[in-house]
Image 1 (tube, helix red, strand yellow):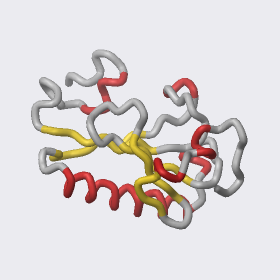
Image 2: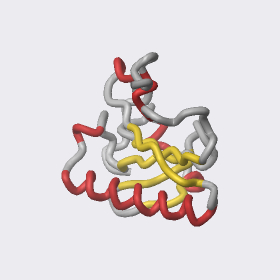
Image 3: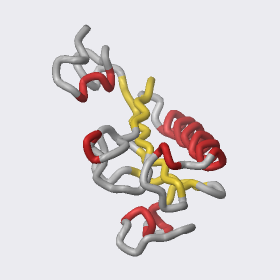
Image 4: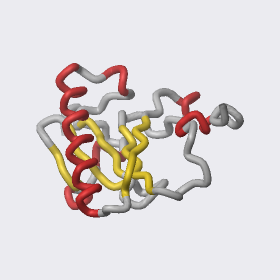
Length: 128
């Protein structure tokens, strides 16, 4: 890993947890998945948040997001959609300060009413 920080869990991910990677980014399954096959896309360089990524890192993350999305859909035909989420900063819920992008597979009927999606982070804002 580039710019590794000793006490960062994403800087010391065991190789056997990595499901795919490219030059600047790797992917793992989330330890606390919201849905089955919930994955994380993580830059190899230790960087605190999405807004600190370089242009090359952004492109690398995007390429791996698309690759993992396609592999999830190939593995599980019940996946019909995705939520892509990034917590940037403690107030936004970030708890590991190494940038990571959540790729959350969604299936028909996994919630009563999916309308509003990520707006449900703040109670009452998802129903409009």
